Amino acid sequence: MVHDLIKKLNTARFKSIVNIVLFVMLILFLIFVLFRAEKINAQVCSDEDCGACLSSETCWATDYCFWNLPLGPCISFIEYDYVIRYFEDFEQPAYNIGYLNGQNDWISTSSTVSSNSYNGDQAINVHRELTSDTAYKTYFSKIYGKGFFDFYFSINEYPYSPAGIEILLRSNATTIAHCKITGVADQERFLYCNAGDFAGTYYFVADVSLFAWHKITIEFDPYIDKIRWRYENYDFYDWVDTFNDFDYINQVYFSNATQVGLFFGIDDIRLGSFVCSNENCAGCITAGDCLLAGCHFDYMSGDCLTIGAGICGQNAGLQFCDNEVDCEFFGGNWVADYCFWGEQPPTITPFIEYYASNSNFDIPTGFIQSLADFITPIIETTGGFLTSFKDIFDPAVATEKGMLFGSAIPLMIGYTGIINDFLGGLPVAEGLLAFIIVVLLISVFRIVVKLIHIIKP
Image 1 (tube, rainbow, N blue to C red):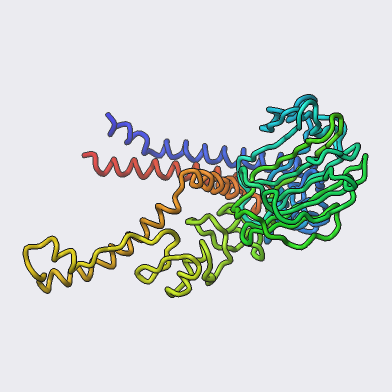
Image 2 (tube, rainbow, N blue to C red; image 1 turned 90 degrees about the vertical axis):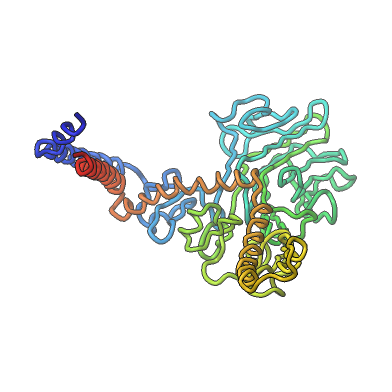
């Protein structure tokens, strides 16, 4: 019965039907292209619609669009050297006027969404009602590598409490940057910042004025465990060491422990990383971004490295150490002519010692000794790899890296935009993909039919 069905399908009539289906698909594709072309022509290249910028010249002419070299497309939310990963403007529909707690994953005691804002119609007010008020948010995806955090703030009077107003940037619960408007006598107006967990030197940043919105930018670099900051658009202060090592940033925290009624407004929070490029491979978060920039993605560490011969160094750089001295200097373990990242692999008992304690004979034969000499290096190397894998594979980190890497899939799908932009914005790539998929399905079906036809007597 199956054989008869296959014979009927493998006929000239069936092939004609397939050709008609392909022809109809081609017509529908042409209609879609024309419709899409009219829609694109109606779009205007602007900061609000970077995707409508079909050339590098028009893209660069905007303020907040970035032409993804070499062939595009034009991407939004790029400003100077920054890629904005998170943006909180506290506007509707994500936020409603009223208590902040619970809205869009924020946790607070008495903070509210207020109509007093820097930009738009809404901001948040970290104000004290009965006890000190806090507002913080832990972002799901962490910012690895060199990045930035900036926001606008405003106060309507100077705090007189020694606790004052505090702004913290954290890696989970570990404070990496700490700024405060102090309430110490004769210093009520001043903004200070330091690095670390409330320790070390506080550096004077600015004299804060009332009833005005001010901007703070904090840059962080986990590779050197340092931060720096700037007030408004003035020059950055020098880099300062943190008191805690950190690998990423994922939490912002605001506190108001001063008098009741003081308005401490926060608006337009941005958290992100540096632009991913061949000159700044460390700014690439996903494997897709890394490879597109012409860099090398290390799947073991999740780091994006400069392409070419790597430099021997800490962590992911250990794979490039070619001798025992350099390997151990940077914290690696030299086993079987390879530098491992992690704990020292288990010591392999020499074969002669093992043979003497586990055999009834005094010495092994030449054949057994030769076999042991051949197998021992393999066991040592395998043990080293397994130990390194055990040290590196943390389920929580693996989940995090997996989600980051998963973002490369929609990015790769987005590569079709490069073809479209090259052809004037027409959706040629999508149509070709659909056409190829149908042709492949038909080809696979025909192959299966022929195989069954050959096997079936």
